[in-house]
Length: 305
Image (cartoon, rainbow, N blue to C red):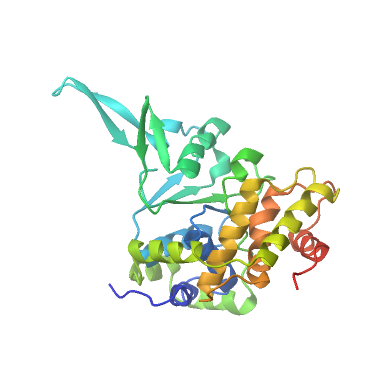
């Protein structure tokens, strides 16, 4: 397996299959390198599932997909113990969560009870079933897709579960040039089958460790704190950013700097990841379009000198 020399090589490879979405691919890879989980919200058919498949294939990671439905049970995700007559005892059969990349497809079509079954796995990278705790693989990455809440048969994710996702992205419709290439080119599924890994789990873990070790200046920490404080005191939000959100913002900024092969974190890294990290955690008193909400937050706090 050829090992990619830099994260940009993976972004280039993914951009050949997912057309016109380079910025989304970059943020998704940033989330993966930061060790977080990703929520992709958009209407069906915009490439959410394809992005999850591509990320897993490029790293050669184990991949499982669970189609969330209203009758899905927690045991269908976590696993269950089954009595075996031959041995006279129970044997645990792991569920699909025991993988490196789990695609929770249309996660908001499942009931809240089933949605919450993912919480411990996402936060602790372990699963407790029938009194026994079992570790999940490393790396472990959840990509959940979500249909708009206005669609029939959806259960909105509670704030506690939204907070477990480091980033939320929307794919959006392709631009005319990208859509024409989609209409006239090969089927995306056949291209996905031909996609060869260009990195592996060990490389991903190295990038993750390198990102965590990047230097962050005190002035940049002050900037992050000022952003967090504004969300709590600005009077525009029903809930401000939590300490966990602040840690996620800093981890994502470090990973973004690593993607761009920098040895330290810049304010531009914080600004690049802030909308994806913060907006799903910030219910506005007066709702705004996402781009306007992001612009408002970024303009509210001065950049460090």
